[in-house]
Image (cartoon, rainbow, N blue to C red; front, top):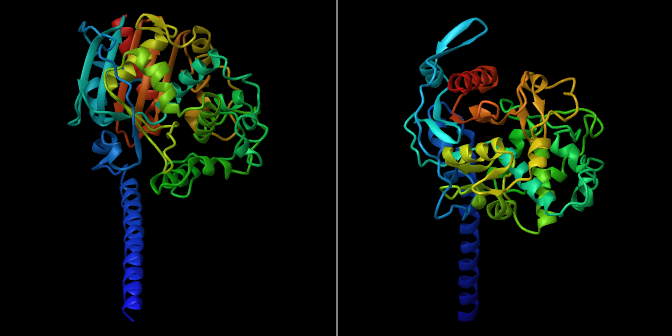
Amino acid sequence: MDALKNSLVTAAGGLWIVLSLVVTFRWSALRRLMRVNSLFSESRIVGNFSNMRDMFFHHDMNAKTDAPFELPVAPAVMPESYSLRGTSQTLADWKAERRVTALLVLKDGKIAFEEYLQGTKTTDLRISWSMAKSLLSATFGIAVSNGLLRSLDDQVVDYVPSLKGSAYEGATVRNVLHMASGVEFNEDYLDFHSDINRMGRVLALGGSMDDFAASLKIRAWEPGSFRRYVSIDTHVLGMVLRKITGVSVSDYMTVHLLRPMGIEADPYYLTDGLGTDFVLGGLNMRTRDYARFGLLYANNGYLNGRQIVPADWVAQSTTNSAPEAAPVVLDYDATLGYGFQWWLHPEATEGEFFALGIYGQMIYVNRPLKTVIAVNQADLKFRENLERNLTVMRKIAQTLA
């Protein structure tokens, strides 16, 4: 009887431990989901964008160097106002209305202006959102130059067999770089049921991003027919990069891009529940390090005494080489040019391009005017303000010319 009693007590104890673990896991997942659901709330968005590690799984990167690439300070007079469609506005009002949290302007590789707003600090690691796509493109280009990919015209399933049977079967690496996979994907952040928001919930609840990509079965059109911005394409690009390098994206990026650049602070990547880097928008860095990356591309891939990204990859990436925009796209998508995960102004001069993230994140490069601008925002009306932001970037560059 005592033995039976002891067995029952042991079993009950084991069951209690299992139930406790399940409750703890579920509560942790539920807490992340609740935080994600309030991620863009007006009262929390500024703080959230500088503290993403508190809401998601993440991976700290050991990427800073003992001697960061120097950005000398050479203050310049900024424009007081700009004009858009016949209406003028002061830069001060633009910063307030767009909830600018950081603005850093480089002229000739020197800091002409630097400001941190909305209670944020110089040292904040700020979420890149889709600016991360441009850093992934740079990292991918380095891998290509190292001979790790046979051809950009290989199918992605040649490298990632788990995507066979998905909508990505038949799409080439070049198609994915151009956002021209043809995969049906709803990118509407304001639609709770959209694919992009379903993906966000997978991330918050600890699911697999690779499985999510493989679950997409429907095509809107054949690969390479049109360009339509779908963020999951960049995740697939990351899957290919992991396969050809044999390491995580964050590890390859650290060794081959970030350390050679001489960044000043260790960044971190958001990850899914399996530790896979959220490469389409989960990089968090200081604004100065975003500016260093812009300067790298302004210098045709050369920085800190070495050619880090091949110059021909920089040129391909920042040329409007993608297919024409799809018949039904977001307004800004239809008017802008696109290369390899980089955007171009509708009336871009040669050497003018930018990385773009939702809610107003931007790295603007104007090579002819020797200007790089990194800006972080928490702009809830970001969709309707891209033209305004680009106008401000051009005004600043022209004023400093």
